[in-house]
Amino acid sequence: LTSAAVAQDGVHMVTAGLDGRVKIWDLRTYKELYNYYTVRPAAAISISQQGQLALGFGSHVNVWKEAFMKKQKDPYVVHEMPGHTVQRLQFCPYEDVLGISSSKGYSSIVVPGAGEANFDTFAANPFATKKQARETLVNQLLEKIPADMISIDSDLVGKIDDAPRAVQFAEKIEEQKQREKEKRRNIKEKKKARGRNSSTKRWRRKRSNVMDERTDNRRKKIAKIHKERALKREQEKRTKSGLPTNPLSRFKM
Image (cartoon, rainbow, N blue to C red; front, side, top):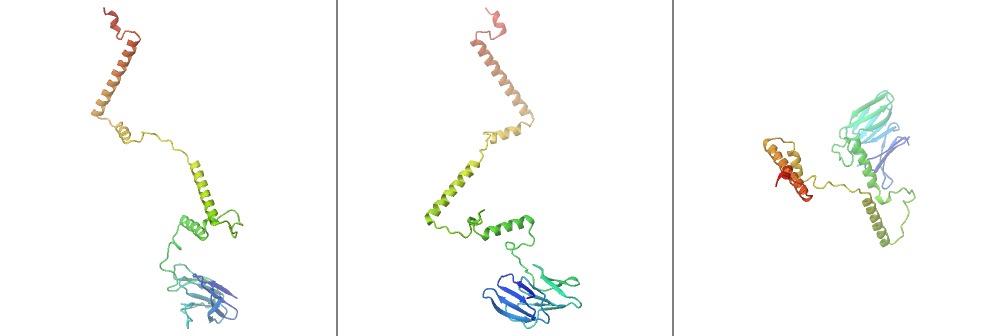
């Protein structure tokens, strides 16, 4: 075996051997579907997103179109590299480009229809940021296995819970109640400033910085009322204690 590659759909696998045969296998049945012959043993295999098969042997690069659908008679693209020895091939995702690594460096060729033209951002987003890529990886890991199987205990997976379904359901309800209690316990009570954020209070705070004739007269009136009330309270206090309410009242007959 000189090289091997698996298609993106996970159904087909391509292998190359020293006998010059390139075989296409069905991984569902582990049976050979088709085989191709190369002049020299293929040293590099690559499969594009659209299912095009690229083979590199010696100084030759052949690309087969729809190789998994039926046995093809002629290659789709033939590329010659005189004086070079092909070592590795790789299709560029979402592009119609095939990268070729040889004994004398790197080169690339255009293979029409190789890349996926309409990509699905939910499956793979080539323009994703680091944050989006991290969130996608976490979501894929969470969707891969049930959340109940995520545990620190490495021996949890594979164990069988032989308890009756009613007991399992009761345990889940109890665990949920415990989590709700912990959540309520960790909630801190907010100190509410009652009345400070009412519409009237907000309007008054805004009006306190407005200076006009109406506001000035209202402030003078309020100050006068406060002064009169304070004087009245002082007089009532002096009357109750038997003191004269007016300094000139001592001269009254």
